Image (cartoon, rainbow, N blue to C red):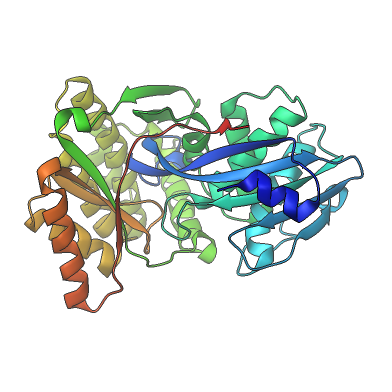
Length: 387
């Protein structure tokens, strides 16, 4: 992508620089981030790339190579939460970079002069791979560099999350933005969502003769439709009933006693998923540290059952990926991301990647579903300046 050249053609002058930020896939730990728990994402090679130049007149101009819409022209001083719809059309995509500018300004950082921004992305949208976080983080990093704000990667991630929460109106946790901002090549990111401490965990599947496949079901999901917010509210109510600030504080060994205190069946299911998925993150960490990479497969599959039965955020296409992969000889599989569509991950032996992929494609055809997109998840670098 010649994003700098596209910028020059669009705006009539050269950009001050070019930056990129990746999408992510989450290995384990779903819906645990806003419960201040543990997650383990890895960055994908798919990125959002931004060519950016600063302005001095307070105007923010935004354009995407991926959206058939003219340049969005806004004023930095007039940006307010929910002033751009997160729905379809120009307002939807523009809300993410505009929200970052608002979040930086609202936090007292010197971005009031405005900017011209041109974006292009290879992160699939609606696939649960954090295309929105990539847009946010690349915008934050570019402005951080150009305006010399001196913010570190975790702080940029938190501001990007605030843009999505308060400006766009999606109550996401911080995992997506932290993965995009902080991941490193060849590693999974073990993130404690309470204090944002991170550990880069080596995840070289090729060295073990393994491959992690991403299966994009092409079933679009929208986190702003209320289902995500409803589950978040249920988790918060569960924590309130149990007398803890967040469900992260309920130890796995305490789970049976905690569930006995919950009379609402739905809240009980949500609590069971969160506490057990935090435990699954710890299991995966232990297995990877011990070099038992194949042993994480059953943990992934167990996580899918929890997402399907307790959190109830799966769908027929995601369930088909997991069941078909299991039948075809995969080591483990689960849905990943916000659910109700999006993607699944499948851990396979290198030699089994093509047969498993073929089985999944055939199963989708037989079920009358749209053919999924299947590609390997290669742990890649986080946000960085390209030029």
